[in-house]
Structure formats: C-alpha cells, structure tokens
Length: 88
Length: 330
Image (cartoon, rainbow over all chains, first blue to last red; front, side, top):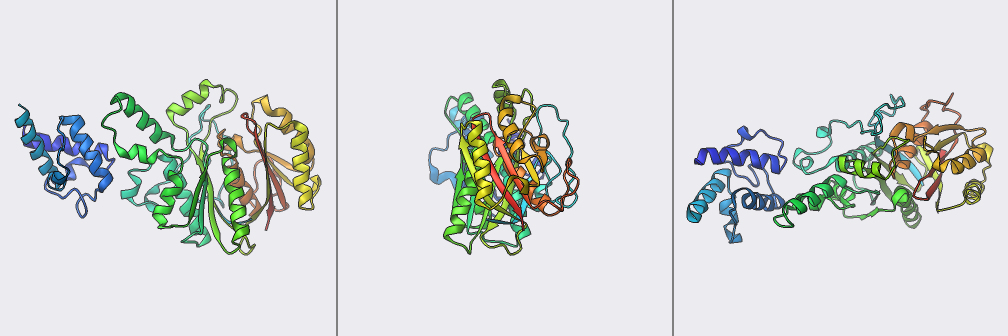
C-alpha cells in the first residue's frame, strides 16, 4: 500500500472511530492531531493505539514514542509503514 | 420543594416548547422515539461526538432548565435512571465479544456507566458540588426527588438540578419486548430536568410530597393517597388533575381503578404514557406535564387548566414499584 493510500485510509478510520464532525478529506496529513489541530485528547490517544493494533497489527511498544508517532496522520502512516517493513 | 424551571425531551415536541405544546396521541407503533432538537447550539461539537442519545438528551434538558432558572452553578446535580447509558453499554459488550476481550477502546466503557449523564453535566458546568445518580427501577426519579427534598431541608438556600433520563436502543427494545413489556403499550424514552429550591419565589409548582411503595395491596395504595393528601390538609375533592400511568395493559388496572375512584371523581384524568410511552422514569415527563399545566397549558381531556391548583401523579409499574406525587400550583 502506498503512503498516500494509507493516509486516506487512516483519515476515514479516525473520523469514524472518534466520531469526528469533519470530512476525512478536509484533514491535512501534516495537521497536528492533538491540541490546536484536530483537538484530540488522551482518551482519543488510547483509541488511536487500539485502531493501529486492530487494523494494522502494529503495537506501540514504547509509550514514550506516542507523542512522535501520533503527531499527525502523516507520522502515523510513516510508523505503520516502517513497522510493516520490519515485520516482512 | 419548589420547581422554578422544567425542561423535557420526549416523543412529543416538548423541548423549549412549553408555550406551544400540543399533546397529541402518538402513532409510532409499539416503539416511540424522542423528538430531539438540534444540539449544536447547546453542546460543543468536541463534546457532542462522544455523547450517546441519552447523554445528549439529559445534558440538553439540564442546560435548558438551568438557563430558564438563570442558574449557572447548581449546588447539587441529582439524576435518576433505570437503564443507564444502554447504547454505550451495548457497544462495549459487543466489542468485548467480537475482540475476545482484547483491544477494547475506552470511550464506550467510560460513557456506559449509569452516572454518565450527571457527570457530563457537572463537567460542562465545571460543577464540583454534590452529584448523585439513583438507579431504582421505576422509582429512580422519585428517589432522586426525595434526595433533593432532603438536601433542600438541610440547606435551604441551595438550588438543585434534578432530573431523569432513559433511552431505548435497538437491543433493549428487542429484549424488553421479549419480556412482554410492550405488547399492549408502546415503549418510550425521554429526559426531563428541573431546578428545585426551598423557597417559593419565582416557582412554577411545588412538589408537596412523594410516597413510594413496593408490592403494595390496593388498600395500601388507597391509604397512601389519602394520607398524602391529609398530611397537606387536603381531601380527595381538592385535586383537579390526576396524571395516571395507566396504559392499555390491564395488569395494573386494580391499582389505577382504586386511585381514580379515590381522587378521580372531580379531577381530570390524563394518561401520560399515551404521550411518552412506557419507560421506568416516565414520571419525570408527568412532572413536566404537571408543571406546564400549572403554568396554564390545557391538556387534552381537560376543559381549562387555569382552575388546576393541585395535581397527583400516580404510577404503578409492573415490577411492583408504585409512586404517588402531590403537586401544587404556586
């Protein structure tokens, strides 16, 4: 799967899982997920961890990597692709 | 206990519509769903995305009641609910089964507890005061009211936000229907909140007293009604309106017959579940009806609301839980 396709999938999955009141296509891949960006909070962070595990079989082993991985949808996509490559 | 504001979301067009309210018998089959407002003007989008229907309905009616009363920081928030947040409970349990008890997301679990409605109201108001939720089947709302009365007796200056909410979901409807609950009466749902205080200024109605009974005989019900009236210096002829929980289901007719014979000769009788359906906290909708009647709104089956000085709400639930409330005009 290409990075662009993965980003589009993540946008749809995140909007559906978190019941966000925005259109997936209106989200910028580099937009911050937390605080001033989409305005997600710590409960959403847990939802994102489970989403990544359920849909892509990728576990976030080190909690301290969280802020970097979940900075934006783009960084999430990079983390997933990186880990999928290692698994293969 | 004096009521200064009342708000309800029900299968009727009741929300923010006390003046234009026209009670019409509903024809939604055996499942009545609430007529819900646009919540966007009441609840922030960031908060609303996590709220199920019961939370939205409860929060919206609470905010509306507080706005009517001009209260921003109530001294207590007291809620009654029998079923609690069923939609989120269903989502959480379904995921537990589907995911074999692994990788469970937090939101549905957090929102599934019975006290979520009261907690969400407190979070939105940043209210750290007394907050309690009562879960006592068909006496959940009545118990919340009794707690409010005791709290107001302890602290006469306080203003208490008290209400009830119950929702019907696809799953709960199927299960309850299987129990035979809705064979002769439509299932219902709703939320109603009130602002209560100890002093009569700016009040629209007074809840003078409440009696609750579990598995009583008909004589006990008759005695309880008479005692409640006598305690407040009233006789059966002083009541002009009886809000009766009677439905087409005849299982509890012996009780309703007794109450209607005791106080129904002079009083107009309104069967409130024909308007809101059957649900355990439906007496909160009946109290809202009593409040707007006290404000002059004439209900179907009544000739004139202006003469209503005293009203009685009586409900006999099939679980054996009975309640009697005496309401007076202010």
